[in-house]
Amino acid sequence: MLQKNSLKKIIEIIGTILCFYSVFCQYIIRLNISDLSAGMVTLNHFSFFTILTNLLVGVFFISQLLPKENKLHLFFASHKTALATTIYIFMVGLLFNILLRKIYHPSGIEGINNNLLHVFIPLLVQIYWILFIQKKHIQYFDIAYWLVYPILYFTYLLFKGHFTHFYQYPFFNVDELGYSRVLLHSLFLIISFIIISSTYIFLNNKLAKKLSFQESIEHK
Image (tube, rainbow, N blue to C red):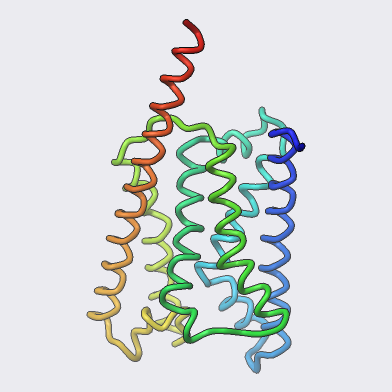
């Protein structure tokens, strides 16, 4: 039976490989099938929240393979950073499977990559967080800091879309929906993010309290 540390390292290696494989394999496929210039394909590909967040997860897994005194390791090993990363990739999986699965269903290698990015990797990160991330008390106010990433992304998407008229997601398409509906959609997503983050923090704090109680019993 695998020891916990060995399982942890295996998940980190698998997670790193799958994140970068799926992101860049999907990029190569888009380069080959698109009529756009390589520059536009690159810009569009690396402007998807899915792609950026999976790259973030890839860096997260790499950081955990580094020595414990490494600054990148210390940053991502923080219980707050690890939980924020877990929530971001959970949102990737949730939103795709609820809102986009019916309108985008590729086959072949592209379909495999799509499921890696939106199903397998998000689930792998949830398992990793449950098993290996230390649970410490987190304030609900920390959600305000975690919102910076999605809000900056949304702002960038509108700015980019204004000039390129290419929007990564149909619910952000200002050209078709107008700013009022797009802003309403973004508000709904922000509220959803706050609710989901609050749920994660609640579970985290419950687990932290339980572990703290168990440790106090063991030291008596």
